[in-house]
Picture 1 (cartoon, one colour):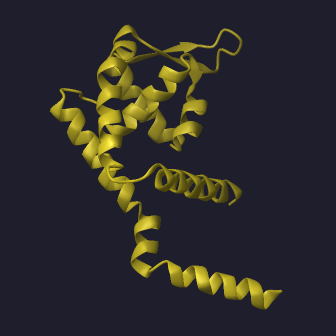
Picture 2 (picture 1 turned 90 degrees about the horizontal axis):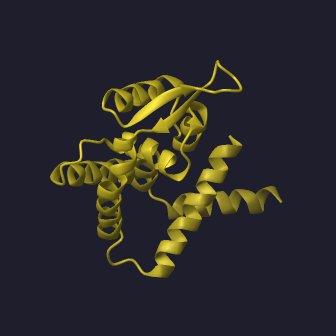
Length: 158
């Protein structure tokens, strides 16, 4: 059994080059995609970062959620999330309100400005996604999606 597992690991390791492993672990693809998204936002007069956009996306899906839920969904640590929310609040996109059931807990709500910017932001984000996946077949996109889901699952087990 050990030999079979070892042989499988060696085979998988040989399929992924050192450069590909570095790119995967270093987040090179995501770094470049983030830069493209930020540039497109600027070109369209949107003054949001990718990180701010990911927070707003969570609120567009479900408004009035806790900071911890947003942090978990976006993979941000507590200090980073606090900074992001501070900036979004300062810029008028969100507001914090004490939870009626637990006053120690703040719930995050969209302001009118935060709700309205979705109409401007999402077409740009979808355009970027279309450009980034240009030339990929539906099957290739499904394969990437499956692979990412498996990697996310593996990460959650660590």
